[in-house]
Image 1: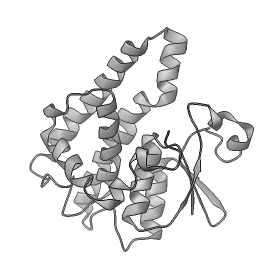
Image 2: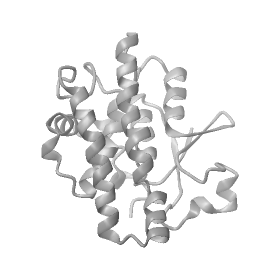
Image 3: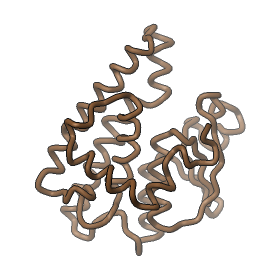
Length: 211
């Protein structure tokens, strides 16, 4: 398997966690988003959306991180990212989508670039924008964890899809100085997950293209 990735892309980060949790060997191909390598003609042939991640496997190219996670789940079901029962599976997908659908699209690099280019937003205004959407999403996420999470994982007794989405978003929250004391369960899950090798190996600073 080959993963087109940027070390600080949270979408690529979540796929790295999933691959590690499932014990899948993969090669990384670095795509530097700061240098806009994703906008090249060569990369557009890989992903016409000009985004990471992309997973290459058996001659096929898969894009959109959530679709990649579902593909890996179906291909390697023995180390599951989703619980067995239907209700818990729906809950985990909902938690994952708070990050993937509600927080991340408003905070990714191309959104921040757009705010600066088209609305003259300065660095502090971008940071305020970033923190607002994380805090809104994390407030809902924290409520959904109450009474369900053991403080180690989002759902159940092992790491899964929701954790793979949450940990990269917490990484971003800390980069942008979000006050994490408001989210004790999220913080507890982060603290535990980062003791586990699949999460530690996926940390941005541990990637071959980290600067």
